[in-house]
Every structure is written in structure tokens, then in C-alpha cells.
Image (cartoon, rainbow over all chains, first blue to last red; front, side, top):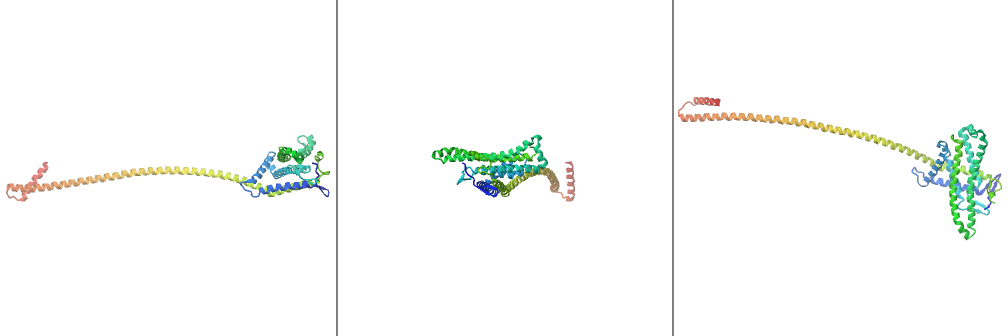
Length: 236
Length: 173
């Protein structure tokens, strides 16, 4: 369980090569899915185009439930990319994990807190950016003192809490799923009895992890749009 | 042993600063690529479909209105044609009636005329026949008288006499 990470230090940067590789794999899979399914676009959609359009409408509805479409339309691309990237990332670690030497190479990239916190921080920075861009600096600063000025410290805490919960919720769910899968895999490889005993909980947990993987992708996208709406909408 | 892994930067003693950059770069590049190659065209086609649907609905509405108008036009045309046909039939009937009257009067006149001329002819024939009968009677009488009298009187005198008598007889009748 306690595998090493393949680290590479370049100057002052430290890369976890497995994380970078898994990010690339997830990105390539997402890109291929999206690219292939949008090759022969028709007005009357068939097959994969239907699926992609369903995802687009799904994200569109998430955005619409938080803000009006005129404001939220610009986050559509971000939302679709987020939900697909995170869903694929969450599922990557489910079928197997690869340990080479003592180093864990194949896992979900979202089972790494650095990745999820980076995504969460990116989202929060984006919300602040769009808050300033669309509402003006005055209005943006003003939101920190509403409804009462003594709420200011709480508002500051809220921003950090949002970032932390957004990133760590995803990380925790996926990492826990992988830990349990790893434990079950260890049980299965321990012997014949262990193998038989591990099959059923393994299948159950994998099914549940698939569910969690999609749910977490949905929650991440949903919260992204909620935080975004907090900053850019008038009525929130 | 697990607790170590739950700390930020799990698996390593230091923060994997390179991962942060890698995550950002990969995600942003993925987003841009998808926007260019997948979401853009897909959104375009969805937009296009929306427009198509809207225009189709509009066209259908227009066609419906047009057909309605056409129907009304046809209805009014039909009504017009029907009234026209009725008027034509009526006119024809009236004309027929008129013609019938005309033909009847002409026929009646013709018949009258024929009858009259026939009557006149009959009359003249009758006159002629009477005259002929008279002549015959006169000559027969003369013959008879001359036979009876056996006396030769001038035929001319005789004749005058007899004619007178007959004329008298005619008058008496």
C-alpha cells in the first residue's frame, strides 16, 4: 500500500512522473472520446454525437440551475471539460493499478491531492477573476462585506474553505476508493481462499467506485458553477 | 502508515510543485484543444440545429397560414362559381321559357294563318263549285226546257231568262 512515487526533480520543481503520466493518459482519453465522437457531425445526431450532446446539455443544465445562461454560457466549455476530465480520471484507477519496482505508476490522477487541489485552486482563482471582470472591482470587493461588514473574516475563511473542500472531497473519495481496491487486491492475491473471498466485495466496490467517480465529477462541476454564480450573478 | 498518505503532497516529503504546473498545463491545453476540435463544432451544430428547428417551425407556421388563406380563397371561388352557375342556369331557364313562348306564338300564328288560308281556299273552291253547278244547272235546264218546249227560242234569251230565275232562286235561298 505504501508505494513510492516516481519523483523527478527539475531545478526547483518536483514532478511525480506517475501523476503526470496519468494526467496525460486521462487527457488523451478525453480528447479521443470527444474528438472521435464529433467527427461526422450531423443535424440529425447519431451514436456518439448523441452522447456528447447529452453531456453538453447536462452541463448546460448544471449552469442554468445556478445562473442565467447569458452569464453562464461562457463557462460551458470549462464545465464540459471538467466533468469529462474528472470522470475519466476517477475511473482510470479502477480496473487495475500498476506498481513497477516499488513505484506506483498507474492510478487515478485525482487520487493525488496535488492534482485535485490544483484544479480546485484554479476554479477558485477563475471565480475571482470573473467576479472582477464581470462585476467590476468595486462590486467584487463589496461582496466581501455583505450582508454585514463583520462578516468579512468569515468571507475570507469561506474562500479558503471552498478551495480546500472542493479539492479534498474529490481526492478523498477517489483515494479511499483506490485504497480499498488495493486492500481487496492484496487479499485476492494472498491465496485461493482470499481470492474467492475477495471477488464479491471487489465487484461491489468497483461498481460503487464507478458510481462515486461519476458523482464526484458531477459534484465538482456543480460546485464550480455554484462558486462561479456566487461571484458573477446579481441574485446570489 | 496511511496517515502519511492523507497529507498534502502524499507519497513524497516535499510538495510536488511540478505536478501543479503539469496539472494546470495539461488541463488548460486539453480544454483549448477540445474547444477547438470538439466542443466548438458540436456547439456550432447544436446552434445550427436550433436555428433550423426555429426556421422550420416558422416555415410550417407560414405554410399553414398560406394554406389557410388558399383554402379561404378556394372556398370563396367555389361559392362564386356556384352562384355563377346558378345564375347561368336561371338565365338559361328564363331564356328557354322565352323561346318557348316565342316558338309557341309563331306556331300558333302560323297555324292560324294556315287555317285561314285553308278556309279561304275552301270558300273560293266552294264558290267555284257553286258557280260550276249553276252553269251546269243552267245548261241542263236550257237543254231540258228546249227538249220540253221543243221550241226553238234563241238560246241567248233563254239563258238570260233562266239565269234570272236561278238568281231569284239563289236570292230566295
